[in-house]
Figure 1 (cartoon, helix red, strand yellow):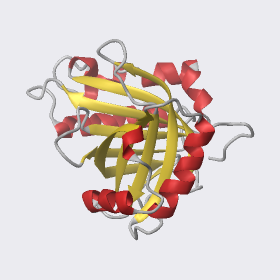
Figure 2 (cartoon, rainbow, N blue to C red):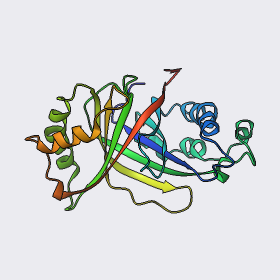
Figure 3 (cartoon, rainbow, N blue to C red):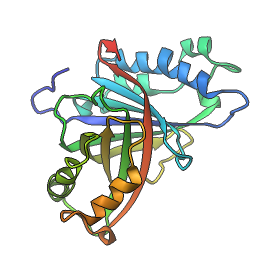
Figure 4 (tube, helix red, strand yellow):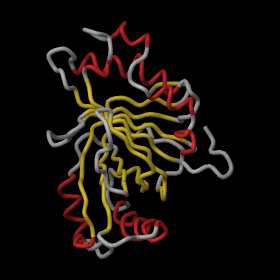
Length: 241
């Protein structure tokens, strides 16, 4: 799906945790994603691809993650998007236990991001990505977006190119967030997505090598969190992979 002139690409991150594991299993949640939520959202025409993943460790508050790629982040302000992203739909009951209302069984962390920089210009998260790391960060002093973009391109991308399994890197700015349980969670204002073509890259070793790289940023200038995920599904507009 090509980007329209003047469009600003973005991401919609949908993080899920099961709140009633005795009612809803991970397999049933997966079926709901594959047979209901993903077809519903991809059917809007506002997304070019979606990657579904599970947390690579036990530290993620929302261990099930869907990453929807938007050619234009403005789509997230449309009524079509708002209607589709809602949790409870009439056809959900056919794949869900109990009440058939997914909102009774999960909490969801929704986030919308604008893309600032990319190192894989193909309009989608490549099917080659088997795992990825999300780095949420914020500078301790206010930082203009142009500065953040330049820092990413000059400090991170050269290092990432030295990692053989690194195939995708993007930086985003937080546009909007909300939480299904009410209000907003606190999320940092920058998001980096680093994709790898292996399921279990040496994240710790890569991070340590980054710190010793000549272009490494000074960590004392930032607050950040790192989460890792393993890809379990990849759907492009019009087909599945």
